[in-house]
Length: 269
Image (cartoon, rainbow, N blue to C red):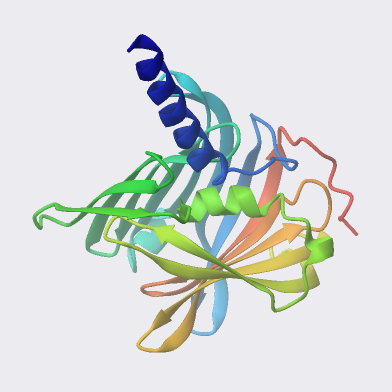
């Protein structure tokens, strides 16, 4: 009897490990301590104006007592821009050291709207199981669950994963289908590799050779780009520019400085 119980436990553990393992990937791009600061620009009457800052950080930590990475992206409008539109966004993700998603949250204040999203990931058996929570302003909290044999990711955990993509095996226009987890739902989205482009920074004379990726979703049958990432075409795959399509218009974040990098930025020209 003891042997049977032991066998069942071993099988259950193996299935759970294999389910989470298939959702992970090898990290070749970053290390704990990576910090990037950005200048944030809005399109104001066809003119791009600096209206705030953004910051990105990856730190090694623990989650539920196990080693993990914590990554966050924070955007903050300036006091001057607050007179026209308030923006205070904080996105946070936790993954294990193999980049398997564990938890995601988003706190977004945009104008008069305040939204909170939470996603908890678990991997029972051969499934990816999600618990989700969403609240807008003072509306009642909405809870949802989702389970699939396919892996799910939030926007930040997919960015961490995409930074280690081997683009030598990819062609411009190639699409990667994935389940995007948000507080309200989990739905299929696409990450499109757009190819290579040399870009000049808005806030300096620096130029970088970049790989370009876009998140897209369908809205009323039409494809809509949510975020476009420009990551350096070198071992760091550092996101030096982010193009954001927000509820109130377009915004761009240009890297101002970076510390704690795992690799040198050999893509700078």
